Amino acid sequence: MANTPQSKKRARQNERRLAVNKARRSRIRTFLRNVEEAIASGDKEAATAALRAAQPELMRGVTKGVFHKNTAARKISRLSSRVKSLG
Image 1 (cartoon, rainbow, N blue to C red):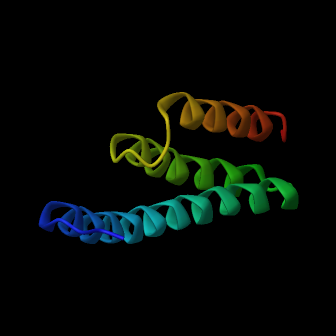
Image 2: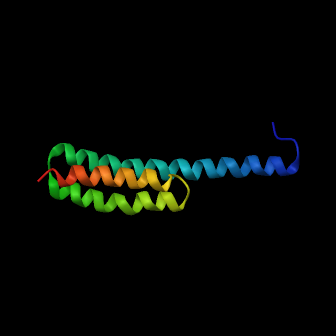
């Protein structure tokens, strides 16, 4: 339990940051799920469009500190290779 004023403030900040990061992570996962569903349906155009929409969201997550840069790059790389193999 936080005792000092500084640690109490830190606890409040951490709660707010957790809520923001949770929302960002959820939003990014939604975009990734849209790509996965488009790939599963076999529609290359829809998958390409979904991937184009997901890429900036993933990279925004990197700049905001939600994901590591290499994690986002790996996800984008694997998804784009799967989309490319649809045709």
